Image (cartoon, rainbow, N blue to C red):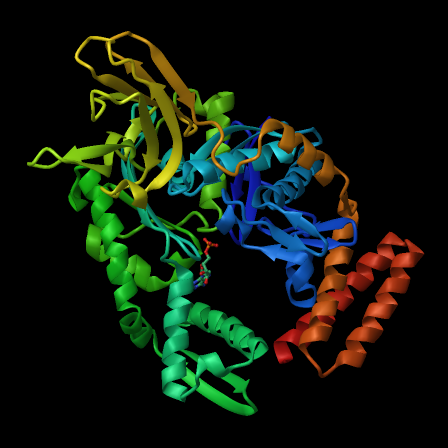
Length: 561
Ligand code: AMP
């Protein structure tokens, strides 16, 4: 059984395709969404809801949003231990796998995992390593918008038409254009902005609040700023729900009240909406299509709940967007479909999925000016972005001088004409024999497969000798031996039995409420002590009953506060 996993920045989901359709699994708390947060409690790891509570009470032992540093050497320190982002992701994956295994009653060994279309080679490899560290084989990495389009495309269409997917998450915006015909799903183009998301809309509101109320956000103590951000987030959600929203908050000892209409929010956000146009236009241009060629527009990601995003899509593309699949679930459902395709699940028998390479891959070259001088550091594309993968392409190059002993070819990804501004993937150094004959040129062949693995082959046209390099391992990534070491270290960490997790999360929540609200502390502490002693009784029915009552008490306390 191959599972599909949406390994998200803020939360993650897991599911399977059961031959009829995608089915997502709930975690130990009964939720489909597991917060992508990891916390250490001694030698025990907590993942998800309990860990998220501990962001407030135990920030030094808790990690969140580590997807942002995937593929880098950045290590997160939790207490005395250091974790790489792929290890933290592996812990989230393990928790998801435990939920799926509990539901299915079998051990899971393979998965399809979604990644942002803009993930670089290093970030994709780190995601694969996370899978290995979680004890599974990653059958395939699928681009998130491709997954979302699959979820819509394969469910609603008879297998024809072009779909444009807009994915606006917390921090990134992705656009993809896919075509379905005769059971083939083909991605025509992806584009995006990796620094544009729901967070920026929040920032716009915070700045307007600061200006209106004369608050200098930089002067606020960290705790007050965090509380303001939290309340503003709820305020923003309110604006997308029923129109207007009012905020009341105590800052630096005085109560400030602020309100904003939906119209004003849209005016404030106009520059952000303007930025959203660019990737949409670029994707259409790359796919050589006009708005009229698109049959369906699909919205995914939490931030598309803002109605102005739907209106922008309607204005630009001339049709009402679809959003009937829950925007938080579309990607996960798509990954289950991709997993179903791998397994050849019954109702997907005829479907073939193709994907594109989301960025340009090339090499560094020197340019000759009109006076015959060489200027190094320029980028020569070999595989242009949005080429359908798998793909193999060739370019010819020549050494700059007859006396050159070595040809050093740098391999890069990116869209900048100056190679330094692109991402370096590797380098091949080839001996040059001055007496080798031929026309003196070399052929550089790039072969890129569906998982985003790049193979580079350089042939000396004179001697016919070939040199190759498989870019399996990027700078800073773990090698096979290091993966084994980290795997053993992760396995030494304990996890709570699944059935105890709701109790663990409830206690973590009570501790957070105790830390956050100075009123009612006695009350919370008494509840906590009482619940601890009930847990010792090991009476499952009593524990469940009290958990419910305690949860209701905390709910009431948090809504009144
Ligand atoms: P995602 O990464 O897809 O989960 O998207 C998270 C983003 O969606 C965050 O920036 C949230 O603020 C935003 N979001 C979630 N729900 C709403 C809502 N009801 N209204 C506006 N933005 C929302």
